[in-house]
Length: 126
Picture 1 (tube, rainbow, N blue to C red):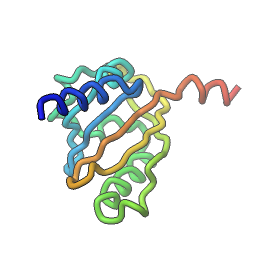
Picture 2: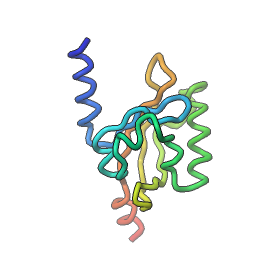
Picture 3: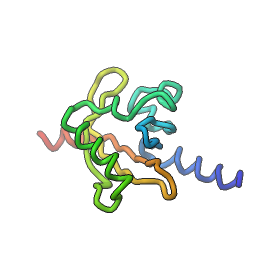
């Protein structure tokens, strides 16, 4: 079992994207180094303390994402698994994020993979 745990921890840490595990009550229970890098938050500031809702910059994004969060637990197949939102970083800057998210089988937790697409969005606008 220890070998399996080490394997999954290595995968979580080395995906190349920011990763979060989210509890049913919206608390972020786990993040990886890449999440720390682009959000500016340390694990100690986030894990078991922050809600993912504190990271959402726009009210309209928050409303949609709260709906997805609740629906994902009742109708996972009817809930988007990929969408974009604007994220507030620790220093107050805003980043455009593409998130892939789904329920972890046999739990009420979600796992989310977040990619910073800010530069791509800025290039598209030009």
